[in-house]
Length: 116
Length: 110
Image 1 (tube, each protein chain N blue to C red):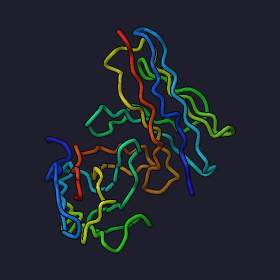
Image 2 (spheres, one colour):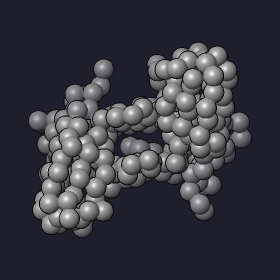
Image 3 (cartoon, helix red, strand yellow):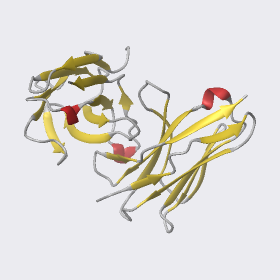
């Protein structure tokens, strides 16, 4: 297993365009998370899936953001009508066990978004 | 709003010294506490987690938790240049999300 994989690694787009990021978690992990990290800040939670069900969503996730995990394997995060404030590193993580049971988050290398 | 506070640093220590990283949190309902290391341009990786008051040791790393003071720390003994990174404190309230601090940048000078 090569770990959590994210694509694309870098995306530059113009304001107003839509972008989509893909995350392939570690194969036996049924929990998948999206975080966003800006320069000088820690990661901020966006959303969480257990299998295909989206169980938690941050208030940070505006209506322009949507995430899916259709078959409980890979996940996509789409941002519609991008704004300059969306520029950030989007981190995907997966876990085998619940965080409450000492589940460790395994992060991917991230997808860096730059909105011009 | 649940907050996790860290001194952003940078914290600079000589090779072989003890590096002490501190973190405070606002939510008294917090249940578990994590330290992640993030090298520049890389993703965070877990170093240690702690649930109970007191100390937890793993190799050169010791995590300390004081729930009454809402304080958690990480000590790195015999610091090495390879320990130079940003250290992120993260707190969990029993849900499936972590609240991270901004991180402390550590530099270990040879």
